[in-house]
Length: 300
Figure (cartoon, rainbow, N blue to C red):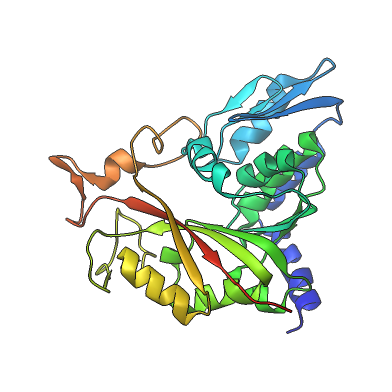
């Protein structure tokens, strides 16, 4: 299937019976004059009288909100993740000015909205979730950006109609059953001398190995491989990257990821052993995140 046909097919997903009411709700939102503040909270200030009850009703219809926070005309969407902690950790390590940028697994677009402040040439988000795209469209109705949101995945980067200077791939790799092939797709999506900013779960140790959970990890079923730093470096070099720079190692905290009124179900506190928070409920090491920069250093 060619890319254009695939894009058209996936846009039809927005008509699914569980999503269609959300799309109809978007059409009820008023067109407003707004001011935007793109700091830790992506904040939209409305410059005229608004129906706040309607805006909150539509936002609540779109739960769960995983990434944030957002403040839309005084309505605070306190998402499960305090995503500004990750963005602020990474921001010293990238320069987006006049760069073509992709965000793989972009969720509702929180990071992409933050990136607007850096004045990139273009931002394209890739995520096949119609709920997350609908959340993005809700926020962008007020932000009014020219961010492109594709209902595509990392596997479509090699056939996408343009390459990128910088690709963000945050919290995706451990969801892929073939991590080396995923890294190859990221490599193929880059311009020569491009960079990938990547984060993934990792385990401590000096061996070239990866943890392979039996069924779930932190109650998450689609976690396949959690590497040591050395194993991730080996995967990256097999994928073609010439250099791997380790940026940070961080233990996921219950301050960063926690249950709020804007999600359904459980969060990190429920995923850890109640008697020993250094372990998951399955007995594996508690989630630690590794942040790296991957380089595609080529000429011509």
